[in-house]
Length: 497
Image (cartoon, rainbow, N blue to C red; front, side, top):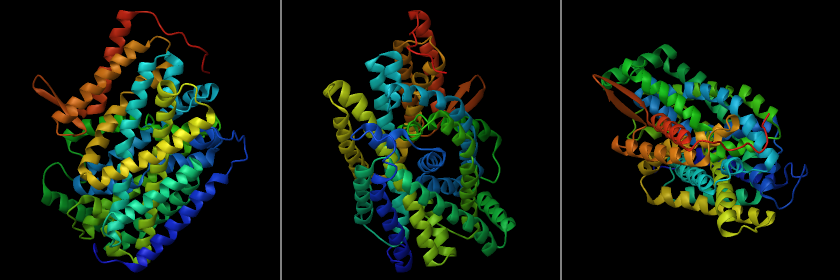
């Protein structure tokens, strides 16, 4: 209960948080002997580009499935029912995209020493304006994402009975220090612990909670009754008008997912293209976990959980049905689940700032050690910025910006991906497409009250579609038309096989 400290749960929480803190600081020496380049951005920002299949699996999974996912997906299912399950097809669609595209992107980055997507774009098109557009979009889209990890951590800290900003500030200061020290190796090592804990929590919950409530039949029946009482477009099944937005939201989200700096950081840190292909095969195991996590939203209805903020559903469910020690274990798993992605996100953003702003515009003569130093400092500033963001601005603002971030980051897809397969596009066409897509997507989102979908009225029919996908369509159309007008093509420096 908020305001009443659960000392048993808090003790368990502190133990596991202390454990990952020790691991975070110890990570600076982990695997540092292999191909060590010393004071180089590759070492700090990409873990020496030496992560094998299992490390990459835990890192990318821990980075992709965040603390806010564990909190937000069940909360959405609790609020709207079946529509909240869009995350499942989204995470099914994303891995064929990873399998087809990311090995090629890795090869280009590895061959030419690129650290960020904007590096790849500059190497392909030799355009500083296009490089800057991709880098700026990545940083701006990442900041609210980091803030939302704090939201996830804030929810479980509140469920422990702690109040005020000091606990979350202290947790993020510790995170900032060991990320500064160990770079990408810290979240990579912590991801092992985080994923193991999350799997234990979810598997125990999906077995024991239905047993306590009378079985899955009771769970689904109770959820159905709750949605019927609410009315509207909620329920155990999608309504006909929800199918198109559901499908486009899943597709657009899948296309955007690995355009984010933090997910690409995990890809670039892999030691081979084959490592990425294997991960595209193995990572769907997380989709099974996500489906089980989503069911917690239905279980909350069966348990009679009532909350004023939907994000409190999962902590309230664990506090109601489990002993304090297990609640503490579950809350620590969720909080640690915030540390891994927040660390990788701050590293991805600082890599972008260092390579695609500081180096070309401030200090072109900067050496490898200087790049690493700048990136370390910026990673601290990014975390402080996210902390200030969440402490002094309404949470809804972070949510709105994160929704916009998905629309924005999707507009980088043509510039990052098309050059891997086509030699036809030139930088001015892609830059114009990016600008139109970004502007149109932002306008539609604000016109709809910062909602992820937009309704098109064509004649007597209306179609509700994911805003980011509509904006991407405009982006590509503009790029194609302008390229036809400009003519010519950008020659490929070296073929990607």
